[in-house]
Image (cartoon, rainbow, N blue to C red):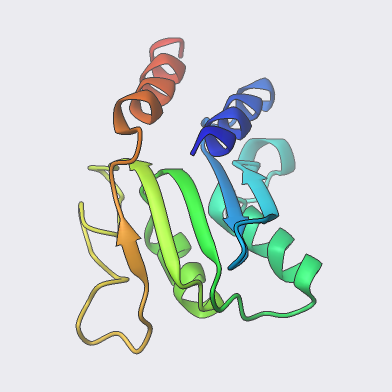
Length: 142
């Protein structure tokens, strides 16, 4: 989570919401990184999770990230939860809850819905206070 938090800090330089993400392979090696790039690239799909997943898939030359873990500082939204499921990531670890748009337990729970055909192990609240503070600081400055 420390690496994801460091990456989140970088997003602030471009005016993006400070969210950072990394993808680890089954051996724990970082194979993908991402921060929010919506503002930097004028791309509404450039959430940290999607950027990290694209980076990892490109590095592996494979759209399936079976056995990989995604670590992200904020609970994924519905779009990102869908990308996690479609990429077949095996484990998700996130920091702060997103009570407005979270799709892994706050507003919806897309990844653990019993109707889902994908199985993702979810660990929530890792360094939650620290991850939440990044967002509070960012929005208080706005």
